[in-house]
Image (cartoon, rainbow, N blue to C red; front, side, top):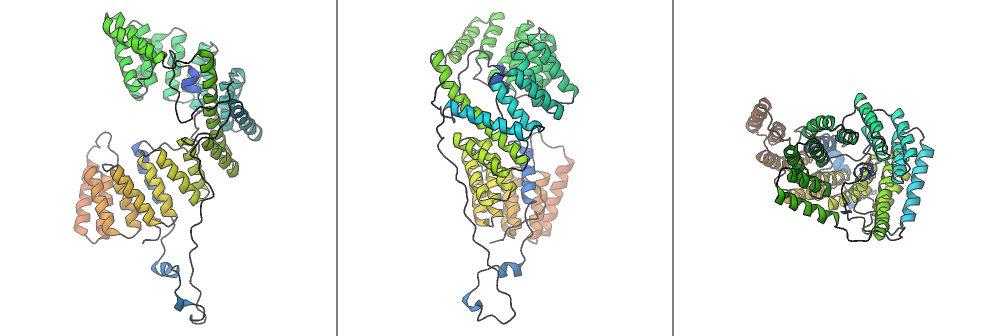
Length: 510
């Protein structure tokens, strides 16, 4: 086993034929039980805005704001009338106690394995009846090919929490790898009976059914699955393979072309598509797809023994990052914040580009009120995911909670400069201007939000800003537009830019 460590920021793109079940599904992924909130979907951005604006303290009155100002010389103890209280001086913001690495720390495969195993043992010892913790332990056993122990622990996870789809999926995966496909079918049908439903369950159930020879039943499961999960390359690929095995080459070709459109790196999809075309007499196309398969299969020109050693170090780095990150979330859920912080910082030391670990760390700091530290993590998240507009909103929010309204405004203006057509950003900044008492600016940004994306919520926000500027006619007109849009069916895919309610938490307006 090599002691070299591969670059963790570069994904391994080597693929030889079908990806293994473990590569697809037993990889250690964040549990998302506490902090890892998927914000990519537009509806959740609106929920994020609502959450951000409902978490703030009551705004200070003019008298309180004046009292918090730095006293002048005339307000010295000697100059103050007797009996008058000394003015309150707000403390300067403290510095962060954390710094995030930019270069991955060196570590051998053996060291990373020891760290992962130690973290797993600690979870099992401290939380023997916490399913999320045992899940991490089982995943590590599966990674080490200790499938019997992994299966035993996943069965306990199901006893503790019988409605978690990932426990069924990973248990079924170990059964398939041991050649027990019929048992995997039974496990996944049990998950459906328990009320679990997910893309992974449908895909693995169909895969297990194909392995026991029931391709017709697999196709019945996959057809509605690709309707429900149209962006699932795995489901499209499995559907194409089942159709090919059933002799429906034309249908298989269509499904496999869809799979390749979603994931052009799948050698398996090209191989199957070549076969589907060949069966229809499309010799030239079949040759092209088989050549593409050969190129993808031979992409890594390293000899097999050396390749195993190189990928072993890289695999252990990814595994360690995932194990430590997930263990951190379990510790946080059980109240051990310091251990959670330590593990997340170690994860980022091993892979500074890991957005999931960074997001978990930011969530941890937010939970315990460590604003300067949260800001450091949010800043890194924005650097890692500049295309995710929610990252700008989160960074602006923590700046605002620190009382730095100008920095929050600057962050949102940068977001708008980088994403000028994203209505939610205009609406978010309008909400902040409402809080800061800048009604004219709030109205302008609310107008820009509905100009880019006219929605009922957007016009309600505009109506609120019009009332703040004393324009009742404008408020009435915006309200009428909002009511009109409420009566109309919503355009597919359109999402509201933000809720119009005035947030209950302004920082000091400046």
